[in-house]
Length: 294
Length: 234
Image 1: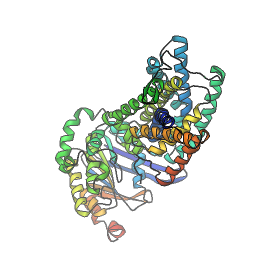
Image 2: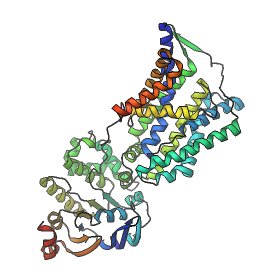
Image 3: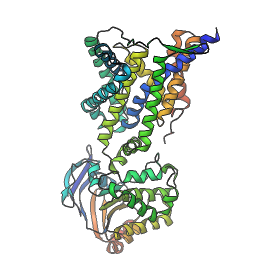
Image 4: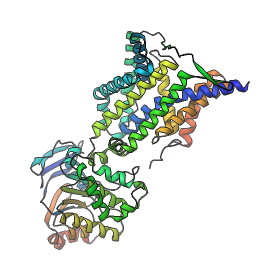
């Protein structure tokens, strides 16, 4: 096996890992703050991808230009989803939230997929811009710019989130709420509003991840579950508590998958990811960067 | 200032508070005492809107509290320090204090109150950059009180402030509680530590099995034979 092939797959792994990280950021935010597990998160990625695709196709908007728009639209979609569905989950006790949110969000997966097939057709869509096939080379390795962009967006999003969480009043309220919502409420934090905003940010992050997916990869109604699964693995790998850690773990998962693809065979990529998932759950359940909880 | 009448609270079918009535006059320390499981904490949580009130009324400065979201009570100056680890372990001491002044009511005076809190607890000033999770038990209780003061309370509610603390720190905490009262903040506390609480409180209620069984001025209750028998001898 040539070292060039290995290097190339390492780079591809890192780049796709950036998007794993980006998708996982939103999932980790919703899970960390609301204690809900939204398995429809990948469907939000799918919707963001379509938003980007249609903005490009009908209005000629470049995906980077439409990204703020997608962020806002998906933020609004997140507000709606929370008010319509997840609000009721967060009224239940913490320990029943995961179970309840799984049921609700799995239903949401089916609904959003069916609606996407109905309105967007089952065709696979990709945004092809003038720069879609541009790449630069580092030594023997080719780095496609549209895929590199996904990693860059992930890093920027993680840094922005961390800044928000450590430097703003809302961010502190967010951290307080995720540690203990009761005590946050007793501190004067409007916990329901924190939940609402956190969920909307989570959806908005999924949306911009979708933009990057439709640019560097492709969008179709059934892509959601795969992204959700990878994001879930990333969250378990990283643990909650560090947003940059999430992106690092995303890149790590991308690397593991692509190395498994090269060394063992393409069909074992997912197997490698799931084995990694089980290993982490068994030996370090709080994740690489997570705090061990009492 | 705070008036509770016939409060009943249940967890589903399990009723634990049966028609509890008490009041906290302005500028006074009132203690609710009683054994574990008497319904003390439940009463407080229901008062703060964290458990549903089955029956009864609660008014604070003339306004009903029933059905009000917790954060709005804090905005009105009703601030509770929950039992144990009231501060956020993953935030630094100063972040905790800053968060204490989260409500619009407390925000404008944030800097001034912070100075006051550091004055009262110089230890917190020394450790302001440290994560609250790394503090000792006593320091953590000081942080909890400091954080509550940051909210500019009119009435401060403390749930078992002495729990798990060394006697010398308990003394200091009660000293601070008296000091807070003298600064014009009324105090309602729930305690198992009878002696210390009765010495500090202006008025006390004894709660048993979800009902008030005795009440009286702190010194009276201390002398009350029944109280003596029930608790102090243990």
